[in-house]
Amino acid sequence: MSDDYLPGVYRQFLERYPEVAEAQGTLARTIRERNPFDERTDRLLKLAIAIGAEAEGAVRSNVRKALQHGATLDEVRAVALAAVTTCGFPTAVAALGWIEEVASAAPDR
Image 1 (cartoon, rainbow, N blue to C red):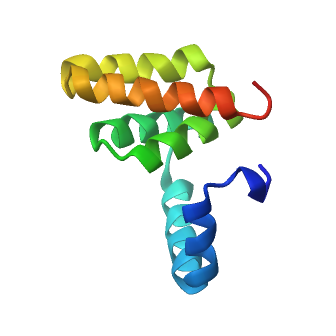
Image 2 (image 1 turned 120 degrees about the vertical axis):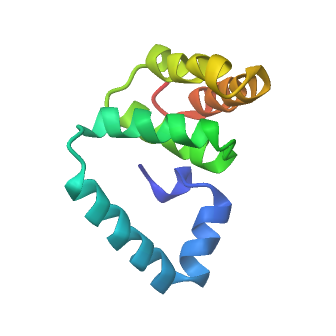
């Protein structure tokens, strides 16, 4: 993924707080190394957690990353649909909206 595809707020964070970004990156890599899941599954799980937390930026990020790691758009949508019965209809619908926005902006879609 090119830096042009990264959200502006994330690029600003990297520029303003490079040491925090590096520490967070190190923590993320350490956790990933302990994770028994493949990258695709890991991103779908993180997407589900982000949807449940109603964290728009994390949803968008994990949609992009799940698609990059081989998840299909239908699989990503299925994660959001599963949220209807666990997180509520409004949460699921919001997530589906964010997913569609990311999918329509993806360079290879």
